[in-house]
Length: 68
Image 1: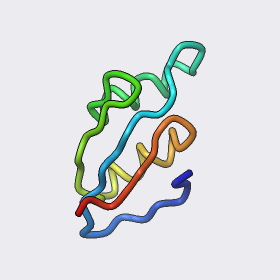
Image 2: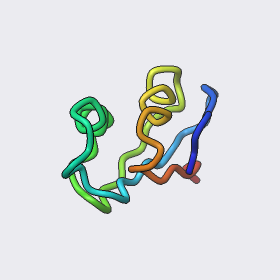
Image 3: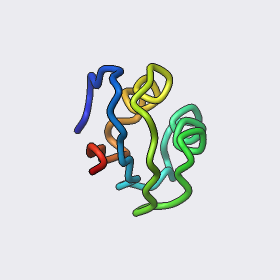
Image 4: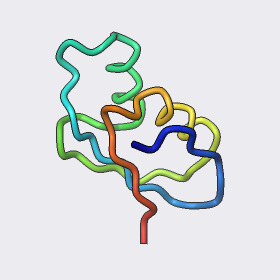
């Protein structure tokens, strides 16, 4: 997945690819903070330090692509 992303000026499309049942509590909270609600849900975020840190916390639950 997208482990070790670095902050930049890019815009990222973040899609949840796995469910949170059985996941750690802080991983669930991180997905909610990113704005993700369900499997297949996609949000668009700037690749700032906060967002990149959250993505690096849950790389196994999300798919990250650069927005067009």
